[in-house]
Length: 205
Image 1: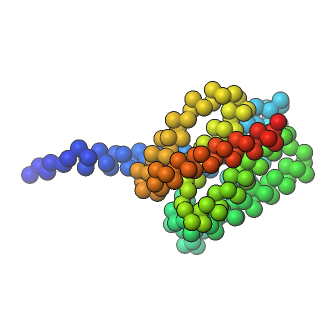
Image 2: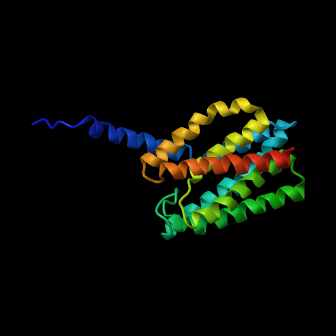
């Protein structure tokens, strides 16, 4: 006997899979790796810039991801996206400490201003997201993605903003997965773009 399904029922699984892949592929860690490498390549000496990019990646992506994986093993959170808002209040300060250590190393070793500006923009964004997260689950995914566009627009020019639909796609994926409301994704994007953009422009200039 053949069972008929409505269009919504048949397309929803596909939409969910697409949303999950977007959420995983364009998560903050991957976006941070990309912006670090692109900012490094924009330096006068791309090879030296890439070396600094690797330093930024270690403290802003590798160490935080290692801590997240450790937390999953210990049962602190269920997955790498840390769906529970209260758990994010435990994670964000750890990431801030790691990024802060990276900034200390850059200051000590004399990193180029744009590379220092990059990690300072990351730290500033986290500092703003933390108190908001205390009462509202603002989207980190869209905050990081929009912040990256703001940073890259300073390094490469305003045409970078043509990639803004990518942020919208990420927002859709988070809403589709019921990880955030539309308002939380929009607020995340605006916060990331404004904070990261202003800090990066101020320090790198």
